[in-house]
Image (cartoon, rainbow, N blue to C red; front, top):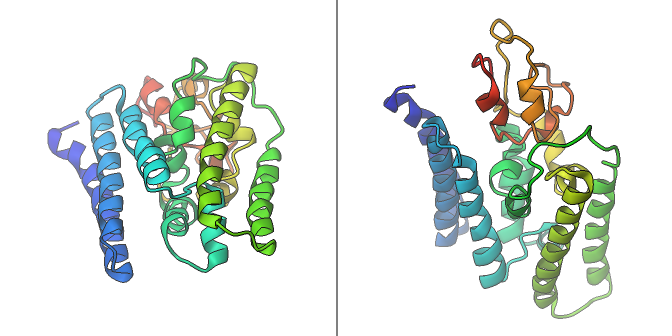
Length: 275
């Protein structure tokens, strides 16, 4: 790959995020959105450039840059609940700020472009889980995926109940919900990873965010596709995929197709450059 070509896709992605940053800055009259989306776009573009330059830890770089920013700066320092409860809180408050904009861009409409890329490069829960020892699932995917809809409903009922009860100090409650919720997610995620020998078991069974991500990801413009003329069906891509996606099938209905997190492990593993 030439040096020039390695810059093209990262530059295009960076420009896309810059466009979002400028539009939100001007429409909301708030410089924060320019800085926020510029930082995230620059981090992702850097990681993609590193990947195209064959740096082995490119995705980890992005996970740490974006994940720690979202968790520590926005969540703990700025005291914004960036979890799903924060989205419900702002939605019920009728405020298009912070978590509502984040969810609209990254988790509701964004997946129409980059699918489940959020899960692979920006999620602060997965940022920790991906450092656990079971990067490749030890066995076939377990079935209780319906539990993600339970956690989704519980988060909605929790915030709706606070509004219906007229509870005060909602911002303080949302902050502590963010802190406690993250600790709970980490505990469950790490526990499931060791119990099922799969770092991404939490993502496949309990994560409520996937309820937003999955339907839009079906129509994603950015997808892993297989050049059938090069594929020798060696199975190496299947063995390294953390989400059990059949990337040799180009159909949108392929097995676990909406679960692809664009981690590129299959691309790196393919001996024929078919992906």
